[in-house]
Image (cartoon, rainbow, N blue to C red):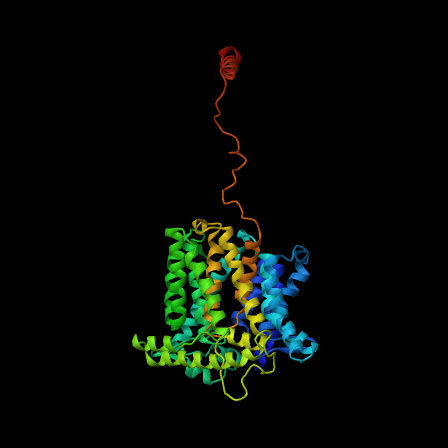
Length: 483
């Protein structure tokens, strides 16, 4: 990558430390994780001996961790490992178990587990210790929406001019020049900005749009930077449509359905049903019970464009081949170094779950799914759907809806994004704590009735005092006293 890309990577850590010092630690953590992933370059950075590389993924975690260690180190002492954190812990060490079970050695297992911890565990941990209550997750939700608003003009530029910002600023494309050909959609371009692919950007705008709509409808956020939400929401939705990610369109439709059912019917059934549906699909896909031929035939009958259906058919075919190979080591997978690819076939794994299944087996798929989706179910138990539009609960409800939609996208695409692990950590803190009171605390002035009922004796005493005070005022105001 270019010298300017390397320079940005070098300056990122001191910049985040300045944010920690200038603003609150929670703002510094958000800038480190969210800002780093949205703006740092790809294919640049430095290797660190015995530790994960300082690349785009590593810089987000390292910068936030160093900032917390310097400016808010006591925060680490407040963390206590609970039952909801165990799935994420097991997911982070799943690579070590896979390496040992395949004879790849403890060094390989430790290196791969550290890399996975930097990708998933560090953002999750930081979200868990900073945004673990309703007030904290409100700050996180507003920060995510604000980051989406910042991305709007950049996406609009690339929609018009093609995905060139990463090339112009950092001197290269995230996936090479061939990715530009994939960016052509519906007579225009699908932007990347500084993300890996347009599909990832589409899901990002889905998440920020849904969170923004939820904050607006619940009355949590009426203005952002003195701009009314009634203007920002349509602008973001227009940008989201112009990103031309049809899968993300469907995800937003599903998310809005969950939101409206919760608002008007006071039911969490669509959200819980989505979580159960995801686990059911993972089970039948990993055990070989799923076959996509019937779905493909049905989509052709509906008249969906051949290009879209054939793309899905290609993905299903590759997943069946890779799934069959992964089932030879179904429990802990094949480990790293490309061993999860069948030796006799040339395959392209598009979905994240099939990669996890091949590398870490059913153990990896289960711990990954539980780490993200179990807090969602626990949140639904802590806070029923009738409270999801309460201003205190609405931000957490929006994030609880976004997380299953991200996992649903991972069933077809492989777009790893630490921001969702960041959200998951915050939601885990909310879901693992007792429900907070949703009643407004009375102020000190209004803690006692201003006009309380009194007994007849108290009334007589009060009247006597008033008469005495009236007589004293007469004496003070008499002409004799004024001479």
